Length: 147
Image 1 (tube, rainbow, N blue to C red):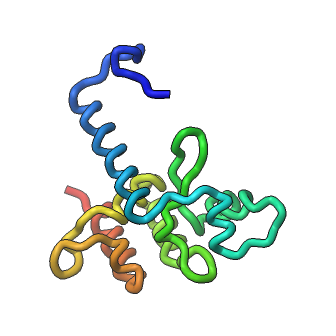
Image 2 (image 1 turned 90 degrees about the horizontal axis):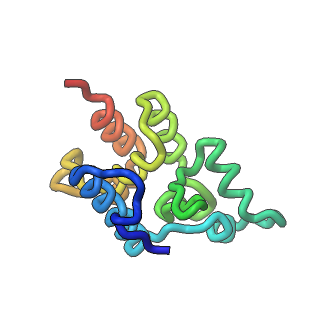
């Protein structure tokens, strides 16, 4: 169901509305370009043969091996996290770094798809999954910096 701003009970500043719009646009771009998978789709891609296929993704998420975003009352998982045999090892490393730096799953996932100057030019961490140590170093540098 679509809701207009006039139907909301609270007042929101233009900045809050702008941030919400920007975040929603980012998730839609990720879904279009990379894919946001349901728990069942994650299990299928990873070859899970269990009868409760949706539990594969939620178990991996709870275990820190997969990151998810809650959208419309269900978790979705950006497809870039999956390698040929399951979740990429870099995901668990990012989750641990995020926990230490108090950065949530959604922020990590959005950061993965945002341009950065960490590598030559302006590419995104998701474009460097073959360099897991570099991705974790870039993440730690981005979120660990204090001013």
